[in-house]
Image (cartoon, rainbow, N blue to C red; front, side):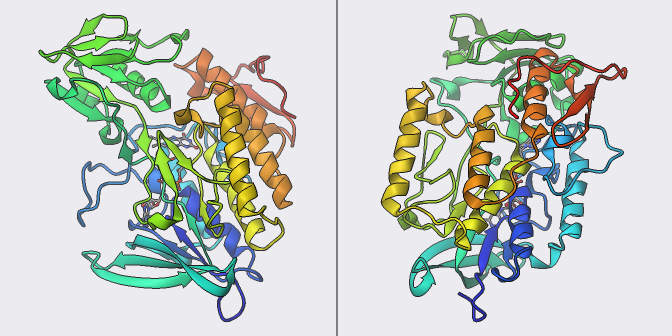
Length: 449
Ligand code: FAD
């Protein structure tokens, strides 16, 4: 504890998650000292700060950013926002990434976060120390580097640490036998900025997640011939001209030809991986015991807390979620743990809870690598945290509107970003297409209210 008996919390990263953590810590001045937010770059916003360069920053550290030039959001602003701070009214529902950056800057203005962020400071190590009288008998030494060449090192002690370092910057490339024999241009979506360099080329694009689909559409606009190779059920919606589907690539032959799971072959000029990212926590002391295996980060109680070190919080590792509201809920839950309004179970009970939760998910046929994909289960997760922590859940329209957008996207991939949503009250919303025609809400979305 700090001298005044307030808890000192370090936040690693000033992306959306770190800003949200700081906003909530600052709203509870009686319990929490002003937080220290460490930010590697010179900007807030993380993912939403477009960076033209690929490779490394001037200081030699790898570029964190995976944003591409023309990206517009895939979640309407009405549910993408933090629940306590809306996007500007005049904006359409699906905004360009520059508007999200502006929005996060306005969030910083509104909640007066700027003064608490240490820019150009990278956290190099986070080490637990036993401290009598500390929160749960613990404290954390956070060592960070700053200065022009990051050579100046400082260590500060905190009662708790919220890790918000983002998870979209260390490209994951699946092991494909013979990949080294591919003779064309090999790239990951992390390094994709715009379609023009690939204009007119033949491309095999591996992965049909949101980025894969978005990039396939961008490539179609510059007359690339795209084979969208993926392991999901074949997409049934209209795809743009020049885009066809294929099963996953299983190997690369001696002459550099790609072979697909159905035995068909292609020899593209470009092999583009839209295969996602690895989790990395390079600063975390090994003895904390947080492991990453097959895209699963564990053991973490409620996907947040290592049972042996319950004053460490890894925020925002769940996937297929609505990120900003998710951070809003997780941050408040963390505060409820730290201020004692939610009393954590014992270490053994938390470990048992994690074991049972993973076993239940595996029992439902979910592979280890997909356990963190909450998808529609995110709403029950959010509600549970709000209930345990004793704070306000998300407004009731949130889940229904978000899930409906998913249905519209699956039906109308080419146009869903032209729709505009209006929230009517805590329960209801409506949606219009580009021509102002009101659309029926999808029946398929279970009313989650
Ligand atoms: P980040 O935004 O990655 O921020 C992490 C911050 O931590 C960075 O500023 C980084 O510099 C800093 N950092 C990392 N390591 C250290 C260290 N050691 N020391 C100090 N600082 C450190 N979400 C949506 O809601 N809607 C969308 O439409 C959408 N589209 C997306 C499109 C793309 C291409 C990508 C990659 C993601 C998209 N997302 C979208 C998800 C998006 O990542 C989240 O919305 C959110 O921005 C993640 O925030 P974050 O704070 O967890 O991570």
